Amino acid sequence: GGRARQRRLQTEAREELLAAARVWPDTVIRDFLIATLNLRHEAYARAEEGFRRCVQAQPLVAAFHQGRGYALLGLKRPLDALEEFALCLRLRDDTYETIKLVRNGMKEVPGRSIKDPVYTRARELVDRYEKPTHEYRSYSRGMSWLMPGAVWTARQGTLFTGPYDRVVAKQALGVPVSENGLLLVDRGALAGAQLIYVEVAPGRFARAQFARQIWSGLRSASRNIPLAPIAVRGVTFTPVDLVKPAALKADQAVTIRA
Image 1 (cartoon, helix red, strand yellow):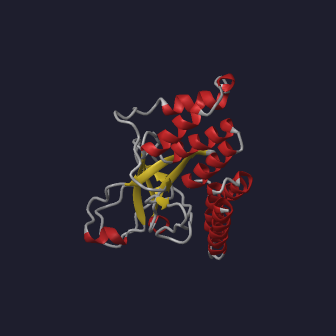
Image 2 (cartoon, one colour):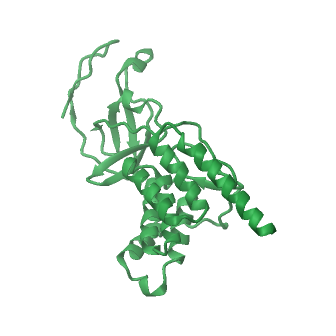
Image 3 (spheres, helix red, strand yellow):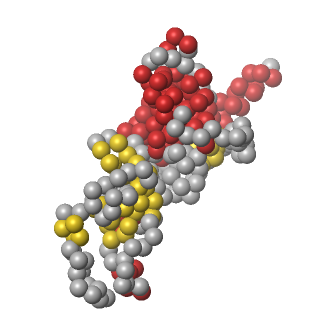
């Protein structure tokens, strides 16, 4: 009948999309694409497994926690899902989408569990942010994924792709040079960065952004300096003691004592 034919066509379409996702060259993005397809077709256990591998590989990508949260909701594990959504908000508090994730995730938690520490922490976290004056609206026709940089949108019946084919994480040592969250970092580690995080305590990360150039006395030569300033919001550092050099000249080394 008509329903059987429709199910057969859906199965064929799913297999074609899965086949396309399986040939993606990067293993993390491949797992992500396959997990989103499994989520779309309510194969929640396989989706959760795939998103979990993504999280283990790149724990600072909010989209991977987002997907695992959706899969955990499908598996009737609302507290575990809420924990993932709260991680999304900590990683990406620059969009109301993550606040919506946490608020909607809280609604899925049954009344008998609202005193659970996971729920309490999520409520305290979301209460730090101003509630928008209007209801959340989505202007895309598909699901938006919180990938670094611009979100990736997946429409029903298609395999979405983003502006890059892999996620690369670089690490560098930051040297605090002011109390108001200013750090100096290897410029090469920041090249092409879509997002910057600073580990301010073991397992605790804060968002950072490129700061205005702070080099005084250097103009055209400043682009040759191998360090770049970044600013961390809401964090206070004890700055290192900078050795004040004589009048700066082009190509002169800047000495930092830590």
